[in-house]
Each structure stands twice: as C-alpha cells, then as structure tokens.
Image (cartoon, rainbow, N blue to C red; front, side, top):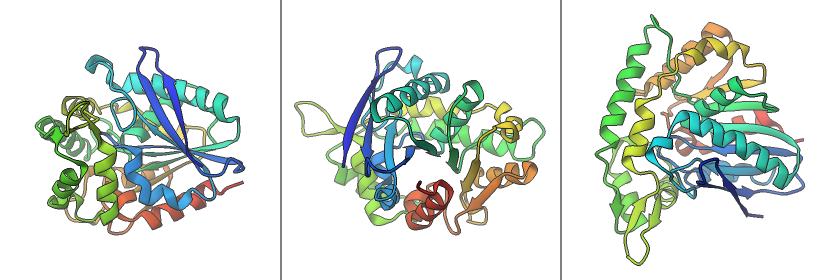
Length: 294
C-alpha cells in the first residue's frame, strides 16, 4: 500500500513523504536521503524491505517530492526543525509503533543533530556513511573540509534543466561517480530528482545547485564527534569500503570514529558513498538485521 503524507513546516514550506508496506507491521522505518538526492531514487534498496516493515520515505525540503523554500532557510538548523515536526506528524497520522531511523549522508547528520537537541523515542538509528566532521587535530579533518569545499564548488556549476529523466540517467551512466550503481537505480534516481516545468516539455532538478552547494559548504559541525558515544539510543554506522580507490572521506571517518568509541560499525565491501544504490541487497540485509520487524 502506498500513501502520501504532507507536512507544513514552520515557514510554510510543504514537505512530503510516501508510506509503503503493510499497515499491520508493528515496526516502522523512517528513511531519508543524501544531499541533492531523493528517497524514490533508493527504490532498489528499500523495496526489499517493504514486505516486512512500514516504510516512511521522507524527502527533506528542496529534495524530491518536497517543496523548496527560500535559500536562507535551506540549512542544517531548519532541517532539524523540519524533522522534529515530521516525527510528531507521522505518529499522529499513522499511530505509535516501534520506529527506527534509517538515514543516508545528509539525513544521517540531521538525525544526529536532532537527537542531540531533542528527546526522540527512536528504537535505533541506522546511519549509512554519515559525513561527520572530525575534531580539531584529527588527521582526517582536513580531508573532510577539502572534500566539502570541492563538492560545494562543483555542484553549484551543475546543469539544472533537462529534456527528460532519460537524459539525466544517460548523463549518470557517463560518470565514474555512478559506475558502481545498479542500472535500475540510475533510472530511479534520475526520475526522482526531476520535476517537470509547468507548461513545458522540460524538467528541472528539485534541488537547485546553489541549495545543494550551501549544505556541503556548511557541513562542519565538529561537536557531533565527541557526542556520539553519549547518544543514548542504539546506533549503527554502515559505511563505504575504506579500501576502494578514490573513496570519499566518510568511509575512513566512519571507521575512525567507530574504532575510537567502540560503536557498532560495518562496511559494505566494494561500495562507495552511494552504497544503497550499489549494493542494495547487502544494505537491505543489514537493515533487516538491525531493525528486526516486531
């Protein structure tokens, strides 16, 4: 069963989430995406879980189904407020039940920031390759900062308008960044990222390049690192393979923070930062094991 939920943020922006899976399931997974991405693009991953869990697919503002709002409100702090509101509204709309957060990249950082600020009744958080900022003096901090700066500069030059999702998927297939993705995931993500421009035959990215760039540039909260062992709820990090040539900094950062604090950690062999689109079966298996349906 599929159902669409709408939520009104404190600045009037409309956020949307799709609900999949059986209403009879006593376990709910609230899932969300990385920066510039959208949850419908993760279908090859989450569809493998839809028979056993109620799944709520949340697109943050400026992504996927959700509306954009002003650039000045496109911030980590606003994402936190949005998530806080969404969690309350989801429980009001769908009822209370065992609930796990399953978050990738951007949304993983938002979830951690939110838990630090608010009392959240998560049964657990499963975080895929969170791009955590290492503390001052850590040997990986500069790598993280350089990577965020580079991504911010590159995405702001990104092409924004396409003739169709097929054209965007074709562009993905030419990029080394997406070389490990499952073929159907490329098509799913291209469709999820675009909205048709009214009264035209063209399509525009739902996340404008300057919005995506702003988030990369501001991903510098080094205080999360030392707070992680005090999170107070079950937590697992599932990261990219640190041995993959050219892998993103988050792969080694995830291993480092987990080793330092004894966190529950795993990595997906042969996968990069986009592990759920590259190894969907493996990631679904890890999710099923951590969130065990009740």
